[in-house]
Length: 149
Image 1: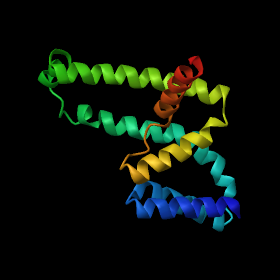
Image 2: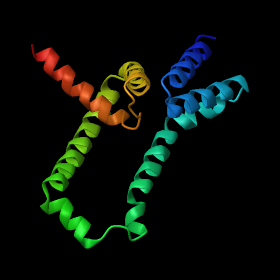
Image 3: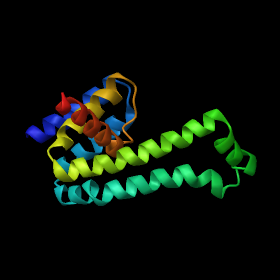
């Protein structure tokens, strides 16, 4: 019952915050629970994350496959300041993702805070919940900074 109330609250917050990703996700999970299909939930949690990340990367790489990225575009990513900062951002994202994975392995209970923070960020700050590993990496860096002082 508590789990259903949490999903209803997330659905409500997603609707109030005009975040269809949170709304649809919460509604689908609630529907699975109400239909008694709880056996599917572990497949969404573990393998579902990998499938989701794979789909995200597929969508990012599709312009290459469609021929929408030219040699000039690639050169611009290396030679122009905005492109160079995008490369640095990609490096930082990959680094933070690795730190996030380490945090989740060491402290699996931190996923609750990440879910709540992602929900708040996506609902009230118009964010998009696409980077849980990067968010975990940011949490790891923040924890390191806070625990040092």
